[in-house]
Image (spheres, rainbow, N blue to C red):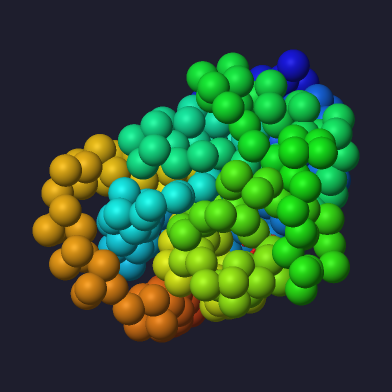
Length: 267
Ligand code: ATP
């Protein structure tokens, strides 16, 4: 379905591949129009982070894995972008953490839910909650379509992981007493600010690392307890923002930091 070949040496090849995947799944109805725009907002922050998983993100990933493994009723909430970009990792993480997977959409339609179900089924998911009338419970303080939740999933969950979320629902879930794990490239978004554990990273980098962390921490109850005890989300966010600030300051000193190949040094 890829419309054009992306040369492997292209400096932004990986980013372009991700875009192609989203566009492809937009045409398959899994990704919403707004999902394409939301991705662009994320990409802008990824530039500022240097398109890398910071050590603060790594700490949050270890904490998130500990939280999911320690939870009694963990749920991974999935939207179109997540299903398009990291379906295999969602299924793998759910298996390791014994978590349920629930589809929850801002732009909800049965067509999109079924397109997402197909993506996850292809990745090996046995069960997907929240489809159609199965999302029969409501989060009363939410006005958007995201208020519809599955009584066997998000409604009953103690820990909800919400990659690529909107701030309203994060806040509502936290107010319901749930621990919320967010993955969001923007440390300033309401989601990042309101979540219990915020992983400021690209979902395509964070999810494989989460699977690895969960595999390593399975059976390590005491290690997980210590990780959870030592983590402070506000401090982690502050350090991430400081890191961006320092990176920008250092780039600002250089001004133009990319040089052209045949750049003439004489004026
Ligand atoms: P909020 O309601 O939390 O303030 P928002 O309105 O800024 O969020 P949305 O448009 O709901 O944001 O969702 C986009 C969010 O998802 C952005 O914060 C963006 O940084 C993040 N995002 C988009 N793509 C990715 C990605 N691949 N990995 C991680 N985060 C991403």
